[in-house]
Length: 264
Length: 285
Ligand SMILES: Nc1ncnc2c1ncn2[C@@H]1O[C@H](COP(=O)(O)OP(=O)(O)OP(=O)(O)O)[C@@H](O)[C@H]1O
Ligand SMILES: [Mg+2]
Image (cartoon, rainbow over all chains, first blue to last red; front, top):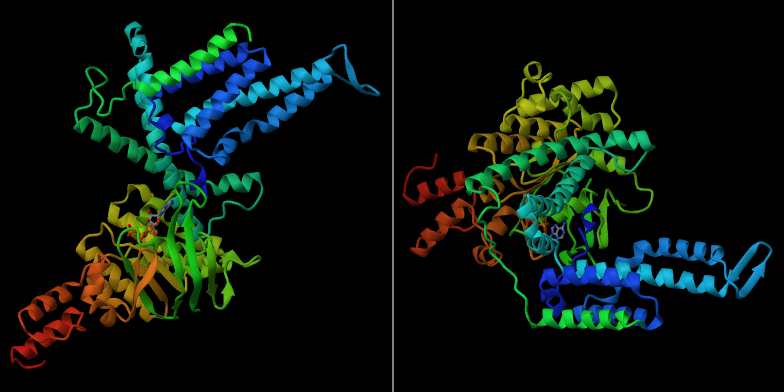
């Protein structure tokens, strides 16, 4: 049912990767994404791939969930592979039939593009699998903090993000409830053409909006009642710190960066 | 139209780290015209069970028969099921969506395929049943009503289809005592009129008073099953399952603790008063 749509794809766990400071994971993921664009040797790709596989193994997330993370881009990967294969021209022809010509260079380039795509998605997947959305928002807020000096509303944006994240599961649950109640009254959300389906959504959307507004109002009231008045001087209940494992992670990624910078 | 379940099992989010078995091996038959109460600690699986028998979710394993027909088999007419079974959830007023009270109540019967004239009659009848004056309320927006009135509109919306089986999932939560009593009396009258009632509630007094059968769930399994007298007299069992006694039960237990021999199977207030009068040597009136 609708509850099966998980937000992000956080896979709870206790591994060192899970426990790592979310800031570390955020920075390192960005670093990885950037260097994947600079890699141009097999050894380089191997290093990045090995690093990601190692992360996956340590995190104990399980191959199925990692695969689920990259599944959505597989059709795109296949599509770019085919396009590249047929349209990149080169010298060494390995297959020719009528107007179709496949060259060794084309094949190489297509494989590389797919590997790159998969590695890119894999790095961000590993981060979202091991970091809860809340941790990510907090990390983002702390990393962007300096920007508030120049008037960028870092705290407000982070707060909006965390409220949204907090309420998406609630709204999904609410949707599920209302859907069941209306289904029991005879509403049908699956049958009919586009217009009929859109019309069928009214009994779902109206109560959903009503309840979303009620919740927003209640939340605002509750926040004010607890003396919320902006980010100024506000502290966090749980503050994560850098540990040894973060150092290891930086070192591991640093090593890969050096290998790639050296031109391998 | 008895409902029969066979080896019913339900698991939330199977195959994920969040998987949770909410019901296991439930085999019961709910007879026509009965007033069956479901009790159980929070999270014992009551709501899951009624959603299964109402055909709103599909069992992980096991079967549900309505009139001997498997409701989850291919080609089973779900519309027929919706007409036969009405479900009232907790806080049903959150399902209101139409511009006027009349239109909202008409939603169910219209979907059930009744003609316009029939629908109009049914809406009127349902409003009468819950105690909403037709002329006063029909043109009002459901969103400008008080909480109690909204609840009545929502209840009327479910009753309007005139379902043979009425499933109630804690519908009295948040009602004032008078509203609660009115509601319970209405349900009792519907039950006396021949409808099957399946009700979840945490109010043991109401259940002791009105039900003909009580099923207690504990950790997803049937724990106790019998007449209210049988179930509510098993104090130890109820305690272990984290359940409350009806007020009468509490009084009887205190009296028994002091050595007064009084029958544990007395569960309604009237019966207890009668018994106490007898014990005190008064006349039985
Ligand atoms: N959508 C869901 N996803 C995962 N688990 C769920 C979901 N809904 C319920 N559960 C779990 O299934 C179990 C049974 O839930 P259910 O709602 O049937 O309990 P209940 O007996 O109705 O409780 P209550 O008296 O609090 O309403 C609970 O442990 C609950 O945590
Ligand atoms: Mg429940």
